[in-house]
Length: 240
Image (cartoon, rainbow, N blue to C red; front, side, top):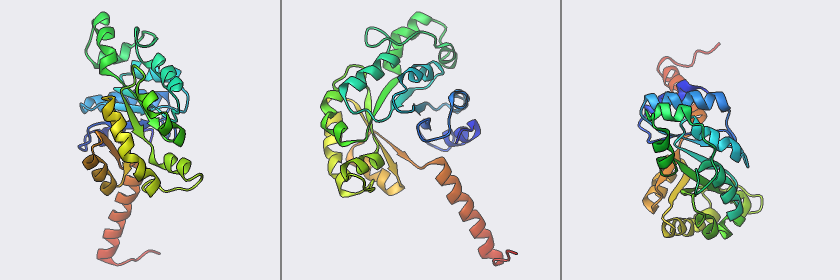
């Protein structure tokens, strides 16, 4: 939901980080900028998922103060390198300098110090969502500047089943160990979409470093449905 107030509520609800979605969600440049500032007031970092292949926007999101950028549908080392070029400063990449807002939020007035530390303090995360990405996983993780991978189980299940849909199904589950092992081998972050509480706990117990649980639209729907149901159960359903 492209509303900074929602982001602020989530940031204050006990999560470690908030993920904003420009690929499938409703966030645009303006809402991302405002939301990063709102999360900063709560002392929480923000990751932003870009549209597919929009590497140019990725660097701009870091200029706004995002703690990291998530690039979806990365299938090859070449695509990973193209992403790195936009989000890491030389000598790793070719990120253009202009982090006015990021420096404000970091309370950093020294531009040279900001550039010196930025590559280590911002994350370049690539999504693993296809069978091709699994086959190229070692090569992708070996790319300098890639800090971690984010497993997208929905798209991965569609790819592995050739059109089916089973994010928690056997095809995806069978790939978890190899994905985690590859990330650990390259000393990169292993992140995943968990969806449910139970699945998220399982992934964390398995060894993933960070897991996304819950989506704002779903949480709001469940909360308001439960609230209205609780009231009706007390007074009887007297709808007209």
